Amino acid sequence: MSKKRRKRRVKGAQKIGGRAADDKARHDRMVALVERMLELNKKKHSGKLAPSELDRLEREIAPTDGGIDELVYEPYRITDDERKIIEGLGS
Image (cartoon, rainbow, N blue to C red; front, side, top):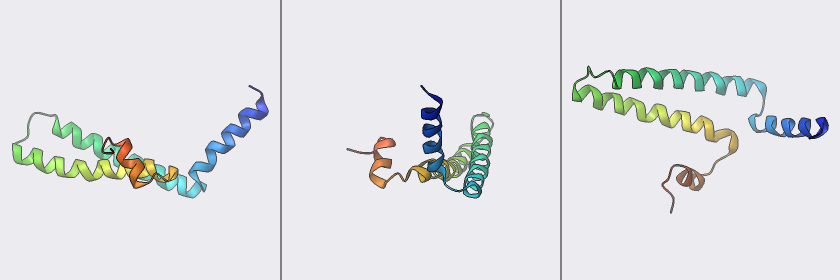
C-alpha cells in the first residue's frame, strides 16, 4: 500500500473522533470509568462480601458499564437499533 493511501486512511479514521479537546475529555471519562469498573469487579470477586454487598456492587457496575458503552458508541453515532444488535438484544 502506498504512503499516500495510508495517509488518507489514517485521516479518515481521525475524523470519527472530532475535535482534540473533545477526544481528550472522552478519553479521560473512559479512563475514569474503566478504573472504576476494575475496582468494582475486584471487590465483587474478592469472596469477602455478603450477598447484600454483592447486590449493591452489581447496581454500581451496571451504570458504569453503560457509561463505557455510551462513550464507545458516541463517536460512531450508533443508533438504538444498532445497539440492540451489538448487545444481542435485537431480533
